[in-house]
Length: 101
Length: 204
Image (cartoon, rainbow over all chains, first blue to last red; front, side):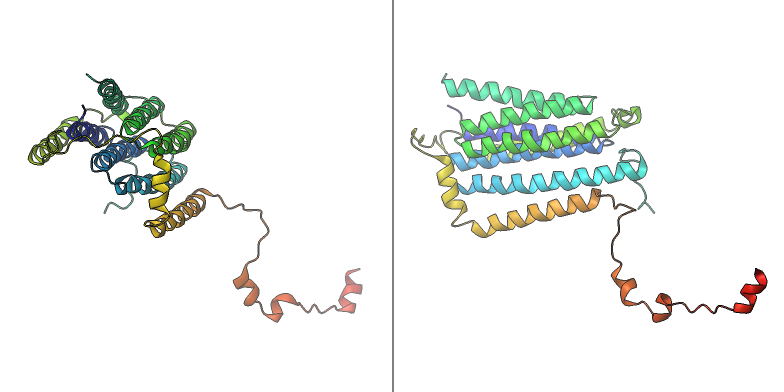
């Protein structure tokens, strides 16, 4: 039998992998966006596990809204990325230091 | 061991393994493909948790739309630059340190709260006639109808924002400049040219 704690441990492992991925790939904005998606998948697994073991559908509906917001976030993030590449010729995060004093 | 337990371990192995390969992959396009495998295994885990609607939504929206968008951007932009991965090992110790801190914190939380099988217990499995989509729809269109419509507005705003950001204005398009039209004076439109007959004849 799979307990709730197994799902929680699994999603926390994936959450930490995504967090480490942001630090490892911190110069590549596409990789950072994908690591954010990975973190969101881990968090959503947490929500659904609590929804299943608590017999409450509110968790699944919350995941539905998280998916909506994440899709909007990816669309705008990739648009900004395309704009940045068009203006600077690179998606290296170290190039974007215009606002640095 | 139950069959669902074996399935859980297989899918979680794929979940953790493919996400690990994804973050350490040197090629961004390959990383996107590994992320697709991660989403597939996450959807399989959600199926084990009887969240059928969200599992299908994850595959349709994430694998079908979001990751295709990612692949488009990766292939359109020049991501094969060597400078992108030059600092691969520079921040690795910091990443490992932060991950370890988060793991320890989460382990403390998980050990403090009673989340094991004795305290939470296995919920009653629904039969084959149970429809997850019907249950979600009944909640979504009654209790959560205002957040649902707000989500629709949010997606509309996202569409408009993405198009406005990336759209290039065409230089040769004929469009009205309203401010210029209002502020136009009579002398801008009409020009009095004095034609001197004498000088015209002289020039001939």
